[in-house]
View 1 (cartoon, rainbow, N blue to C red):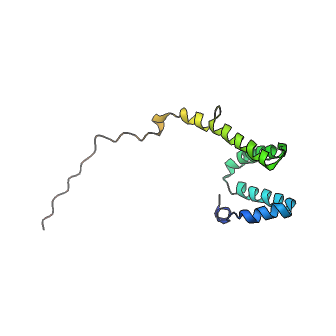
View 2 (cartoon, rainbow, N blue to C red; view 1 turned 90 degrees about the vertical axis):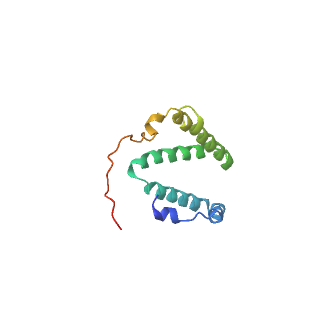
View 3 (cartoon, helix red, strand yellow; view 1 turned 30 degrees about the horizontal axis):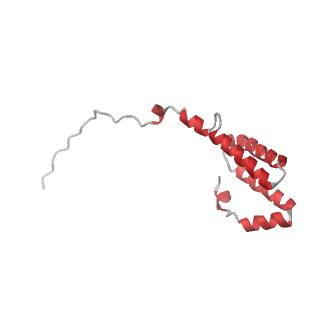
Length: 118
């Protein structure tokens, strides 16, 4: 994320008040904030993040309540972490030889420096 997105502190009370008083303004601001975060990412990652956000939005729409949406999104997160072909599965298949540092060289050129007299 770029510095302007990082520096904006999240004020839960402000967002909560906005959601309670003006849900349409809350939704508009939420979408703008998400779009700004996506725009701050490298171009190559933006499409993937947009697809993920679309999926999140669909789960929210399909849910009967905010709590149900939270549970659905939590389940989605856990599935991507521990499910088939999830992060944990992929980490187990990493070729550890590729990420180990190479063995130190056992031979080297040794330079001799003449001693200086004092």
